[in-house]
Image 1 (cartoon, rainbow, N blue to C red):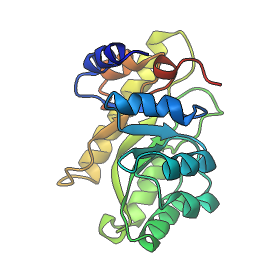
Image 2: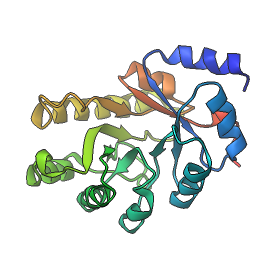
Image 3: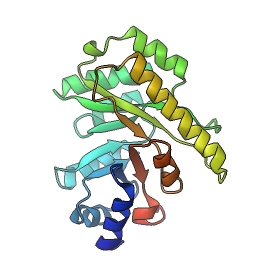
Image 4: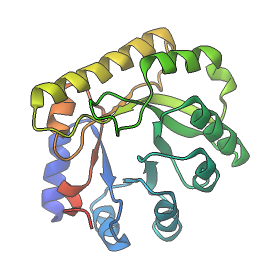
Length: 219
């Protein structure tokens, strides 16, 4: 992708934050977008993200976007800026614990299961209510819950995808009213990828995760 093509693409996003999904891509591909001004990159494998974070510029903001096992949080914590995939109470508490050990605060998104595909991970709204009702936000000093994330069904049915994105926006609104009034940091809705980002933005996305449109097909 040329610099002008990249800048044209970013201008289409308006105020929506671009997470450049660099999983499986070599450092050289990341460095190219870095040279164009991109600073937020997303990875879905812990070891790959650590290797890249250690060797690439230190002002890159690393977002972990894949399913995360609790036992790997301690490896990830020193390097990650935001975790999009908090899909259980156990994981939330472990990220909080490891962030405190590293004397930092990690921004996190609560991932919800909005797709019809059973293979997708994510909380149900009932599980989320149970977790947030049990833990005072003021006690979770190592995490900053800044919003929600969801993945739509992989389908060409735009009506279904729109319905799922609208559902996530409704969950965000409900949580903001019920638990995050006065918490200005709770403002992110991470939804939309290369194939459906325009629809996601139309439904209220504040953050899109784009890979193939920027880097080409996955290796």
